[in-house]
Each structure stands twice: as structure tokens, then as C-alpha cells.
Image (cartoon, rainbow, N blue to C red; front, top):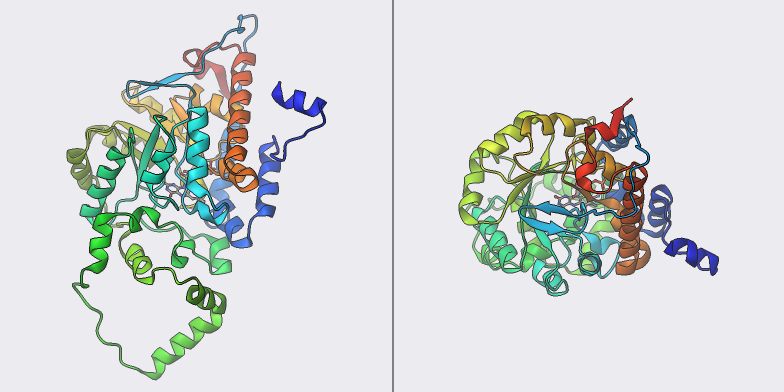
Length: 411
Ligand code: FNR
């Protein structure tokens, strides 16, 4: 109603309502590097497409004459009530699109009451974000570092910052083959972006000042070394100049790159985390039903079915296609969340119908941030929530409990 009334009075919002227009307009407003990093996917972008195709394959089957004049879209997760079945996915390096970055997201999430999952690769520390959120809900997303001590420190800080759950992202033990970033030879972390959770961490700072236990052998100045250096300078002259100008803490960047993920991570590591926190632990990036069952065996409290928005494995399955299969083996024992490709109220509805307790929104809120800061995000979120509420009502459901497998059909 608000959108129509504003239109009637001659004001049309700078934030497009349509998800595709929003994406196009925001990408035009970004630097080419930011557009590539944020909108891009792995390889040919096939997984991103497949996420959308999976949503398209499932159709809503509306029911009529069911008095939907009053509705309730709240959900309960881990014993706590949340007003909507929507969370904000953790997204790193937001300073690429807006100077307020994570702070703007934290304010928008708090204004609406949607939980914000703080990224481990945020541009603003979790303490600063928590400080602008009051009592509004937030969670913390962890990339398992090579240093267990750093993992413990992040979790302790998350607890102290009032985070209500820990989301361990499993699909990014290595960075995917991101062709658009590779074309531009641009990786934000190498410029010192997105490392605020690290540089604000006492353990990380201590590690920074410790002498390297295996110091690199003194390099011999050879013709080969000179040739390698010269080809690097010739290939990426921009980055060398920019790095020299920005003066970011090189030592911190190097350390971050060395330890921010642990490719050797296995199920056995999870006990370390379990022993250190009483907060619910969720695993993000689960796609296989057997992994979902294994998570149950390891005392995990919830799953985020995700392929990282198609940024990691090109050619991977669409998340919505895996949801009913995972839901079938989990049988409601722990909540399932889903992300990757959610682009409207109908998508939220379909995910809930197939067994999700809630969905996480990714890129669309970054587009709102790009075009309108915190207000822009709020508007995007308000649109998603209104769209979902209408879809639910028009499908003949009064509350989320009434949305079930019978509400959708695979075509
Ligand atoms: C991400 N994602 C992500 N996930 C995570 O666990 N930690 C992170 O720091 C990031 N960073 C990040 C940056 C950017 C630019 C994007 C687009 C994504 C993945 C994110 O949490 C989520 O899984 C996807 O964004 C969901 O897909 P859609 O909605 O963007 O298609």
C-alpha cells in the first residue's frame, strides 16, 4: 500500500521493487571490481542459474476460500520467537559498496527485527555492529581458521556481543574459481578489505607479533626471481601502485591470508567448538543428505542449506532441489535454513513449503545498501516481507504452519 500511495503522490523510490531491476541498477552504481566480486559466481555462473531454475521448477498451488484476513508470519528457532522467516546472510567486504558497510546492515536489520548474521569477513567488527543493534537479534558466522585459538576467540567475542547462534561456513575452505574476479585480477582481501574481525581480535594481534615459526629461507637473488617479479608487476601494475598508496597493514593482510581458512577441516574438529559454546551451532553449506545426518550425529543444532550463492562449486545442485531430500532424512529434528537464489516472496514460500524453517537473503540486501545505505536495505527488506505476506495469503495460508509440501508442486 505504501508503495502505491507514494506513487500516487508522485514519489517513486530509487530502490527498484523488481529483483532483476534492483540487481542491474545496483551493479551499474558499483565499481567494476565490486560488481564482479558481489554479483559474480564460480566458473560459468552455472550454479547461480541452477539456484534460480530450482525455484522455477517448483510451483505454488494456491487454495481458495480460507479467510486469510489475519495472518502471522512469525517463527520459532531454538526456542526464540522471530517476527519473520527471514535472516540476513553473512556477506563480507561490504566496504566495497558503501562506506557504512556492515554498520548500515546492522541498523537496518535492527530497525526491522530481522536477525543479522555477522560475517567473519566483515568490514566492521562485530562489537561495533552489536553496539548499534540494541537488543535486536544477531548471529555470528565463522570461517574455521588454521588457528584454533583464533576460532575460540571469535566465538567468545560473538557471545559477548550478544550473538544468539554460531554459523560455521563449510563450503569455503578454499576460495572458488571466480572467473570475473580472475579476469580483473582483483581480490579484495589482498587490498586489506574485509579483515576487520581479525585486526580487532586480541589473539590475531598476538599471532601477528609472534615470530614466524618457520621463517622463509633468505631468498637468493636470481635471474628467475627477477623475471617472476617483473611479470607480476607488468600483469598487475594497478594493484602494486594502489597497495603502495593505501598503506594498509601488509603484515595483517599476509597473516590473514595465511590463516583465515583451514582446508584440512573434518567432522572431528567440530567437537572443539561444541566444547566452547552453549550457543546453537549451525553448519552452512550442507547439500548432501548424508552430511545432514552426520551433522545430527555430531550434535549440531541446525543447518543452512547453501551453495554460497553459486560462488564456490560451479555445476553444483540448486539448493531448493536438495531441501526436500534433506528434510526427509532430518524429519524435523533440527531446523533447516536455506539460501542461494532467494529473489522474492514466492521463493520464501516455496522454501518453507519444502521444509525450511527460515531463509537467508544474500545479494539483494547488498544491492539495497549500494543504492541507498541503511534505508535502502530497509526498503528491500520491507518489499520482501510484504511480497511474502501477500503470497502466503493469496496461496490460502494464514500462518507458516499452514504452508506445507501440499502447497507446492514440482513441474
Ligand atoms: C557471500 N557469502 C558469504 N558467506 C559466508 O558464510 N561468509 C561470508 O563472508 C560471505 N561473504 C559473501 C560475500 C558476497 C559478496 C556474497 C555474494 C556472498 C555467501 C552468503 O552468505 C550467502 O550464502 C549467499 O549470498 C546466498 O546467495 P544469494 O542470495 O546471494 O544468491
